[in-house]
Amino acid sequence: LLADEISPDNCRFWDTVTHEKLDKDRFRQDLGGVVEAYKEMLDRLTL
Image 1 (tube, rainbow, N blue to C red):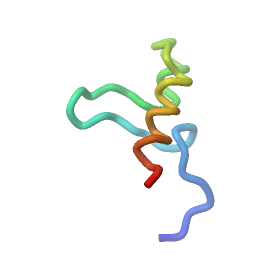
Image 2: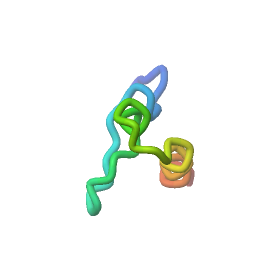
Image 3: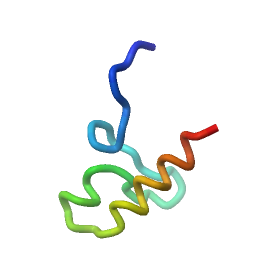
Image 4: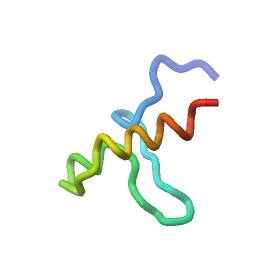
């Protein structure tokens, strides 16, 4: 795998259980909780 950047700004991320959006759609669709969703993604991707 070769990637320049993988982030919620250029990928789609949804929780497989709750189907909650954890990506740029939170901002685009005015769903709120953008910072919290991005922190959640960081927590999930950080080993």
